[in-house]
Image (cartoon, rainbow, N blue to C red; front, top):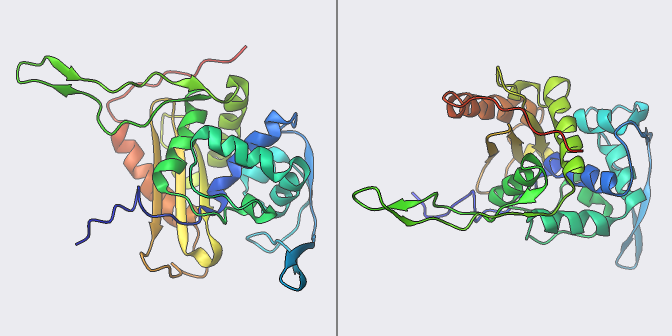
Length: 267
């Protein structure tokens, strides 16, 4: 009924699906998955017309856990320690990393960036996760795999030689963190039997947008659920409940004929 391509043209808030870029930038700044970050109430004074306004980020479950490791914060998608982490490393390194990974949409230079308030497309977000899956190498997007003639001769093949934009050890550790989100965290329902899955959920404010972006060593896929005219999908709904099972079903079918090859361990 429409020529509007939601995967490419629509730009929506990714919510917590943006968080891996904050943690990857933190790793580049010298942080470790075992470092602690406070999950206590915090209030920020933000500039506003005529003065300032106060912003107090909260967690999805409205609970506070005290000091948590960075691994636990990402696996359970805890908002407050993620915002505190962004405050420590600064907004600029996160935006710079996102640009290297291929995000081209406008990114607002503010603390709420940690919670995915800047709209992105599903294609660019999925491609950015693909860099982590590909050991830090960014490959140009190509809608065609190859073009062959009637007798099988190769007529066209896109240039797909990638270039490293993230250190392989950073990509490897981020993959480990995102695998933890599937084993123990918010993306449990994204598990695919026989495959190590790295994935992250994303639920925007009031559950208007739901995302699941993830990968195995062989395939990266992204899913978005929402209305063209933004509206809540349910006040108590989350991507972990709604998006993850759909994504997992697709991946089970897509990987049915493929074999698992363990990723290379960086030196």
